[in-house]
Length: 552
Image (tube, rainbow, N blue to C red):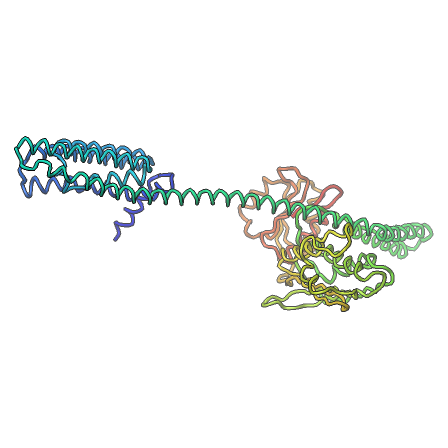
């Protein structure tokens, strides 16, 4: 029916805060409205249709019903204001006053045919006002019944009725009946309130446990971050010697080219020397970039990169991890694009290689292989790292990725290496698998979903927001040389105006003129893919200078 749903919604809309009272509010409102409708109809029926003669007791009854009707109207208004308990208190009080008037004016016998008011008073008092009020209401009603019985005896004695106590004799049985009703209602209310209290207590305990769990998770994340940073710093320390050797070699190339330039007059030879110097400088910058990537602390900066190229880049680092008698073989040729923080990928390789070195000792063979393997419907890049060490038992293999599990001597390992590697892979949609047996070595597989380049760089649309003219020109030129479509502005005000018209068409927003004045390059990428990532890396390289990092 079209009227029923809006009516129910109106009854439920009373702003009552207590959850149990809020459930009772619609029913109590309906009851009050029902009484406000039926009381006038009942009197209209008796006075105008049946034409019942007006007696003194009917005048009393009419006055009582008018009082109850007026109180019901007031109580509906109070409930609509959210004051359900106050409304019930007023209504119960009016009902008790009405019962007192009826029992003490017309006696118990005449009231026995209409028990609506006593039952309604007890039910409302028990459900809303609580157990103490319930039993108080019961005691008052019993007293009124006995008072009504006394009124019957007085009236019948005055009329010389042969058995004037006949009506009063019903008071004990009615008192017992109402006692049973009150007792059952009391038990129900007690059980309901106890269940609610238990639920509230359980809810509070659950919230407390949830807060403690959240704090523990945050603490574990911080601890994991610190451990990851410590691993990076440990790697930096371990690789410093080898990197220093590489840097010295590059410096020697630069110095040699500079010395030879004094003895060369031919422009062609000078250009060759300049190319050597530039090449050495580029290699030195890349070497330093990799070293600082290991030591960088902060959130993930995932990007698209070629896993094969990354392994080729880090191959000299892996070589330095192993003793000279350990053979390092790398089988990686086909391009294998993945999505991950590049420094995390490098760190994963170094973690596994370090474990392999500790397992093999002074000699052995370590093989890195890159291939493609499908998992379900997803094609992925599989990097397998195999050592010729003693292998692991099944019991150790099951626990190899558990945090803080290690077979190394105290102080030699934290037990977090493989656990962190697996976590880094899983966060990027990948996984880690280990195959090993005693005497058969160990193979660790790093699996990541393959990232497919789906559009040319020329379709990438970039907005550059940079207040420094030189930096803005450098980034714009670098991006345009790649074929990107560039919109360059000097400040956020101008950028906001332009964004109102072209925001949906942009692939990248590169902004350093931020209100916070952080001096970082903020990279906003609404649509991240290989092309957009390549453009972002190009812009970051053009932007970077000492003390001015980039943040994605």
